[in-house]
Image: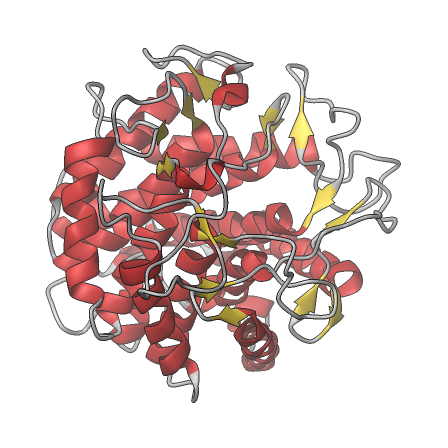
Length: 446
């Protein structure tokens, strides 16, 4: 019996997931959710971040859908924070970062001048959280989701069918740069929105974004550029124009390729569930991106396990950016599960997907051996030989990646995680959604 069919392995995954959610509860502050320090307490030196709070809305809404006691109030707090404290009452949209306390009138206060900018990267995490909260039927979540989707059409959609990355506070003009990270997470949020609203338009938009990424990657040995100019031409230094607090990468990010691989296959499954034509490129994109990132990134420093975060044009780890980050291996877990499931959906035998089960075991063993310092508290970053890195800021916003890794084999490719949980598909990833006509993926098996 493999791990994918092991009840005890599922129990282990559930134990780790519940510990992560319990740890995340410590991040709550009056206006949202904070970064946590190494001791699991809110870090007073760092702002209350929109992406962090959006991710927490997502995580705790999943907890609600799984019936985990106590998660409802945290999900509701996240929805209130996004609707009240982060929302700019003058210009619309949401600030990137705010202070942990509201002002005398009960309004959120930007952390600093940079905190006033409008960032699609941060916003789509809030959109993902709002979609999950709406599926969980949390108070105010449906209104928040609909408002955010209106703003996606008004402000963020660009002339290429893709999205802008950042604006000034008043949405006067966009910053002339696009980023892969923003595109990836917009795909994820739009898939979630499509199911939460039953509006297939958002799945169609997600597919157009996946098609762009395929065009770029297929011409570049399946490595995807990180930054682009106004016309979506690769622009290596473009990310330096952004001031929303994100890290700038000098190369190709292996974790982003893993995410894109999974999302391409989820888009593919979503199109099938609609009965729409499924472009051939999506399966190719998923498998090729995964293998390229695996070969480029896994065990690249003296054979030590772990993924190098950034590689260069030749696929070699970039010195200084070759550390092993928790989120990258978590995305590796999710991607290898997605490919295995997609191949089984298409009629492959279990013996034909053993490579991906081997990858899964290796990645999960790495998480167990190196990252889980104690239940619920995973190491965020290690050096290229898995040595401790100091100073290493701790932040539970990576609980989002870890939760997805612990749920990967327990839910189907489609629908997305929150609606899959709402339809009773947890630990039934081979079954179609019971409440509507749906593509019975595993029905193709012989």
